[in-house]
Length: 333
Picture 1 (cartoon, rainbow, N blue to C red):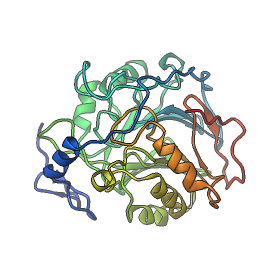
Picture 2: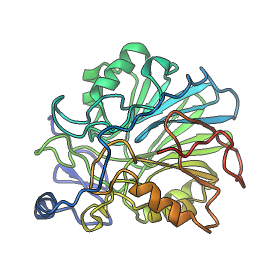
Picture 3: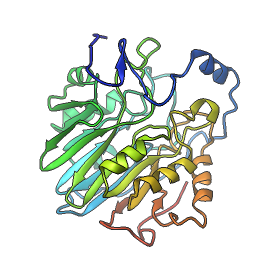
Picture 4: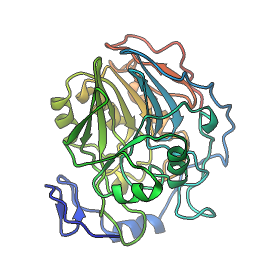
């Protein structure tokens, strides 16, 4: 990989870093790998694909369709966004090994409307899937937004309209403001490139409030920082899975309880859970994240504003706080 010298406050000696936490040590990884107690997953979870989403959503209306894992179709102001799109069977450098789907994508790729923009948060295989990106760039001339260090790879894939940003940078794009915001995570696609590229979340400022896509992140002060910068978050897409064992995963993946705390700090009108139920990436089992999230929301003031989506379902996001769950939702796992 070509080495760069990024002018960034969180870049030093050729690698990016999280300002608030120490880097994970190889000895910690080795301890986890040799003492794993993986939770139960069914080999494959049968499901029926959801209906074809509308081609466009006009005006200030906002619709979020959950594909699964960290992939959403976001539609507002006549524009279609995809977050960390993955339609592949495996999220791995090889086709014959590595994490495999336990359930199919909630929307068939052929039913996906034209894509105007893609939001990429980091280079892990379950978030940056080259086969899916190749299908998308072949089909649509999408803009693609990425953190520092990924533009070179995306150019090779075939993208031409690339916006490569550092934390707190933004671009004005087709009447919207797209902001790169901090996340507490790491990057790597192999054993020798750890933290050579940046990781991030994204906010899209619209006329009716901001859309926040957290990507992968641990719990930390970043949520207070984002809340101060964006005081009208209409919807937050928050990860709730891949947190076990917490002694190892805790700094880079939130627990469901921490996701509820993040929702409260952000002051989001609605939060939607993601990063669960599709790929077995840590030791939490298939239903553990949702079970813990539901327990955390029992008798909570946030019980009606933190949603657990079903694959393939589209959700109309209100412009202000809602006092009830959307009537279109199904909670099937």
